[in-house]
Image (cartoon, rainbow, N blue to C red; front, side, top):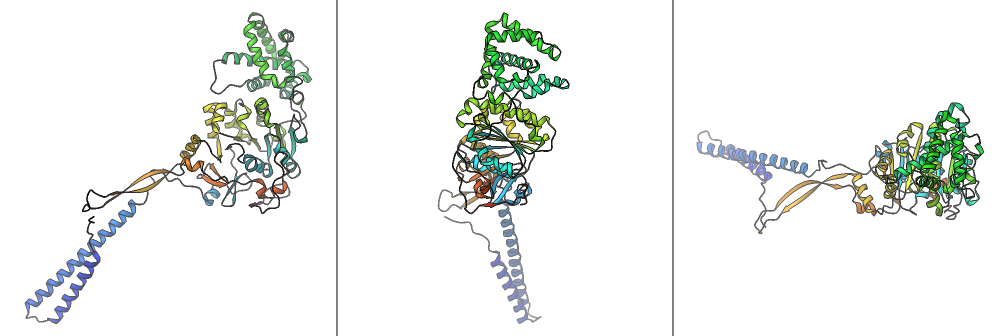
Length: 559
C-alpha cells in the first residue's frame, strides 16, 4: 500500500545551511576580484542555500500548522455534550459535604449529605438496602422532627430509643397491632374537626376539613374512570355525615367506627338524615345536606344504595370491633407536636397488612401534612415515607409538594419502582413528584425502561472517532478522517450492572454521582446507637467502621 510522501523540512534546513556555508567558504577561498566566474559560482550557491532554507522554513511552519489543526480536530468540542460524573470538589461546591443534612451515602469514603429545602426520592427494589442504607441511617443521624411510615415496625424498634435518649424527642407510636411490644398511641382522624366544632371562630374551617377527609378516604384513581359520578356522590355523602357527627355535640362519638355504624344500618341512616335536616349547625349547611340525602334516599333508592356502598367500603377497615377501631376512636397525641417540638412519629403496620390497611398510612400522613402546614413552630419536619406507593394515593399531594418547603417541611418518598408510582398517582403527578425532588437516589436498578431514563438523565459526552479509507488496491493512499459524536455518559446496561454497593445520586447543582451505599452499622457511632432489629436479628458489631462522625451531646454534628 503506497503512503503519501511527506516533505522533510529539517533536511531542507540542514541542506540549505550547508550550501550557504559552502558558498561562504568558497567566496573566501576564491576572494579574487578579477575572477568573475568564482564570484558567480559562490553567489549561485548562496542563492540555492537561501532557497532551501526558505522552503524548509515554509514546510516546517506548514507542518506545524497542520499538526496544530489536527490536534484541534482530535479534541472534542463538546457540541454533543460535556457530561461527567461528580468528584469531591463538585460535591463540596454543591454543599453535599456539610454533615448537618440528611445522609445519602459516600463518595470515595467521604460522607455525603443533602441540605436542600426541597424533597427527596429514593427508588430501589425490595431487599436492596433501603432500610439499612437510607431510612435507619437518617433516623440515627437526623435530629429534626420526623414522621416515618414503618411497615413491619422495625424502624421504631431499632431507632426510637436513640431518638428519645440522645435527641430528646417525644416519641409517638401509632401502633394498633402492638408490634414488638412497643406502646400503642391513639389518633382520631376526626380530632381536628372536633376541635373546630368546639370553637365558633373556626366553624368556617369545617367544610374544607370535611371535604379533605372525604377526598382522602375516597381518593381519585390515577387517570380517573367512568365511575366519577358515583365516586363524587359517595364523597358528598361522606362529607355531609362527617359534618353532622362533628357538630351534633357528642365528640366522644365523632369517630370513623361511628360513621361506619351509621352507614351500615338503614334505619339508623334514615334517622340520621332526619336529624340532620333539623340541625342549626353551620348556618343551616348540615340541614341542607340532610334534606338532600333524604330526597335521594326516598326517590332514588337504588342509586343511593350505590353511593352508600362507596362510603361503607371506604370505612370498612375502621368498622367497630376491627383491628383499627380502638386506635382511631380517641386521641392521646397531637400531630402538631412535630412542628412545636422535637418529635418522631412512627406509623406502624405489619408488612402482610399493607395491601388491606395501607389506606390508613395515607390517611394519617395526609393529616400530619395538614397539621404541620397549618401550625406555627420552629421545627423543620421530615416526612420519611417508606413503601410510599403502597400507601395508596395521598389526596392533594401534588399541590402540597410545591408549598411544603415554605413551611420547613420536606418529603422523602421511598418506592420500589417508578411504574408503581405511575399506577397510583398517574403520570402527571409522578412527573410533579420527580420535578419537586431535588435529590433522586437510585440503586439496584433492574428495569430497562428506568435504566434508559437514567442514562438519558445523565446526558452525553462528546468523543472523536477515526474513520479509515483503505482504498481498493495496495497502491491506493491511506485516507484518515475524524468526526465528533455524542455517547451516553452511562449506557442503560451499565446502569443495571452497577455493583451492589454502588448507587446513583442526582442532586440539583451537581453532576451525577456514583456513590457508595453505606449501612448504618458501618458508621461510628450509629452501630452502637442502634438497637437489635427484631425482624433480622442484631447487626454486626465491633468491626472497623467505614465512616466515623462526631456529635455533640445534644446530637448536633461537629464533623
